[in-house]
Image 1 (cartoon, rainbow, N blue to C red):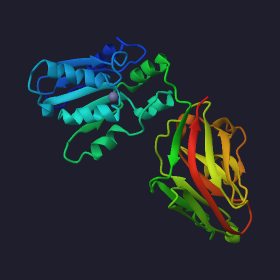
Image 2 (image 1 turned 45 degrees about the vertical axis):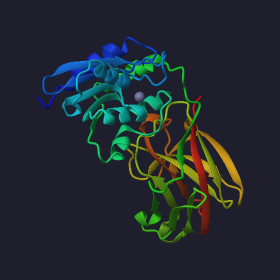
Image 3 (image 1 turned 90 degrees about the vertical axis):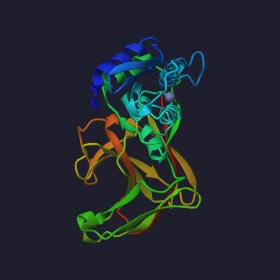
Image 4 (image 1 turned 60 degrees about the vertical axis):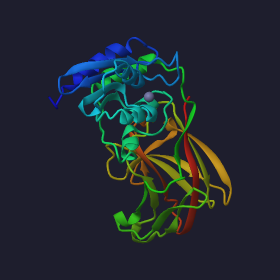
Length: 318
Ligand SMILES: [Zn+2]
């Protein structure tokens, strides 16, 4: 029986999570050859800070003295395993892990999380094999974490820094027939440099750099804090949505002072809907859960060179 029905086991994990309503992390280990539950666990961090639900289930299985054959096992957990637990799952040889709520969703609900997803831990562990399956009974699991109102809310987190390159790309007015040129680069100072030349010819006049689409975990009431150094020209920070129409984004103005580092606080509620460079009336405020990319844009109707440097983009939670 290699294709277990996931939902009944996730339901059991949810039942176990009810043992700790404030930290509703429950876990179940199942023998996939028989469909038998071989161990159960839940969060016991009130006793020991490393005693996560998954660790509890793995320890209980080990305590039974049975030889653990991970290839036969599936671990179900109400939330995506943290890097510590994903490590423990790999070291146990468990080859399938199934979760309900994602780390990104936990972050958006204000839960403190190490910002490394389970998939990445697995990918960086080349001698192990583990399939990560997410989103099983996600709604039910997320409801537990929403109701728990975490005591460990995050006032501040880094959304982007530039210690590593990648993930940013240019979109310039050549998509509309213009000839402006914008490029980006990660500097030795680990900042993002966005630079180029704006041309107003062919009814063009903009250049932008933006992130690849991914879940950002933003929530209502969040403020984006950006630290930039510019050339005195005016830029904007754009928020792109999962279902964005072409040339549609929510925008906030990013003024700069030549050669000076400034920090700007931009509440999500202050971003305005914009399409083809014009405000969209009646679009309403941005839905933070729909934002999956952001970028910087220059379109200040002046021809000539530009240069913007970005040190970090952080999220301040109210
Ligand atoms: Zn964990």
